[in-house]
Length: 232
Image 1 (cartoon, one colour):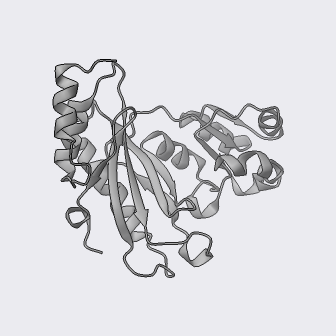
Image 2: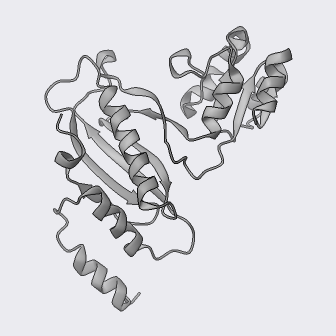
């Protein structure tokens, strides 16, 4: 397919694939490079100096993006009685107990977050092989096993994202949409990177934050100047 004048100009602009950009410059460039009609997600990837095969080098947690994610997160909650009612009132998409477990065992797993009250973990535990591989298993350390399910549902719906380092030492996440303002995307970028820096594990050796890049759903990855982001 022949390139348009705009695409050729942008290809020239990206000619030096070793270049590192400032965050604001990279975000603007992603907008300039956009050729699709849909609202692409802006994603950030961090290469960390950790080996997650070692327990003391695992990086995992939650962070609330101040500008939200731009996505509607479907939330399932395991709870009974008053807690179940509170979860529904807070906006949960599906609430149940054994019935919800059976529904998930049948393959209905179209959720971005699964939350449970502590007393429901006996039921939820039977879904380990189903929820575990999808990263959906409720976890007290992540605040997804909690008596305050209403607060957890609101957090999930309000821009809270989970992060977890992969085998190669990489963490990546969506931080909003290209339609977000520059300020909104920068606020989300800063919040996400700050959360990763604060989650530095005790076993991390040498330089922790090694590489940072941003991209959009259909766009190229742009390297970010790590010195601008963090000095650690």
